[in-house]
Image (cartoon, rainbow, N blue to C red):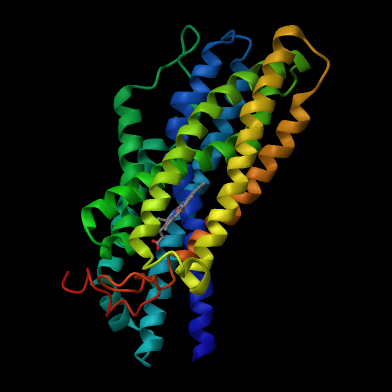
Length: 355
Ligand code: HEM
């Protein structure tokens, strides 16, 4: 029985990791497109970069589609895992009664809400990411409307908020402050994470068949804009993350002598690694790219960029993994209910019991 419970907990951590990463990509693509990618392409000749923009749009469509599917699968799995956990704790059968009990809790309700939100996002984004997210820069190209962007941002923010409303923030005090802080934390984290994934994995498709000077030019435009967006995200993450820690820790000593605190300490260490790499990108890579573009110097900052962005991606994935574990552990601050909903029995968890 204990082994089964441990298995469910490990599976929950993996499911949360997948869901956090997928939801971050769905939301984070919006600020990335608005403040980094579209402005960067606007500085280049629209016609000659049309194929590059097309490649990037196709890859973005694939990324968003995969994230929507991953988020839906993770949500269904989370509900099933919670159902089996309820059954294990009650020593009963995994059946409809247990599922009904889970769906009557706040955890079940917020997970269920996620599904229609994902459905609406699928309808809104299907094929349109590819067709319009980077278009409107050359004559005859369809421009995305502001209503489309606003709806994408609003629905994906709702998706992020479902995590805050079904997690520790919903049982913190004062609850409104914890919830607002958590949603802002998630939005900033998503923006940073989506930026790293897009720069590391799909941006190279833009300069296929282009010469070195062109590659450096687009990279320089994108990196200098992302550098500013990342700086703001990192500052917001540090502030909201610290506040989140106050909401969940009883005392600073818990950082080294409780499971929750140690996991948080590991997360903060990973974050510090990200800050250092962000500094390298901001002060060396960005400047190097600008110099190489302006005076054609022979140094190749692209090699350094590839190393730092790949390392940031690995640290980002580890950080998301540690967060998946963190939100499932018992926090040490004693207000409301201790357990995160996804590892408590669900029947016992506070906010949703009467729902
Ligand atoms: C790149 C940086 C970061 C990312 C991508 C990130 C991401 C996340 C995510 C996805 C959550 C889950 C929120 C939820 O379930 O409602 C979270 C929660 C949290 N984060 Fe971060 N975070 C980052 C940095 C930080 C930092 C620097 C700190 C501490 C100073 C921190 C402390 C926390 C705490 C305490 C929670 C609440 C966990 C709980 O519900 O028990 N985070 N973070």
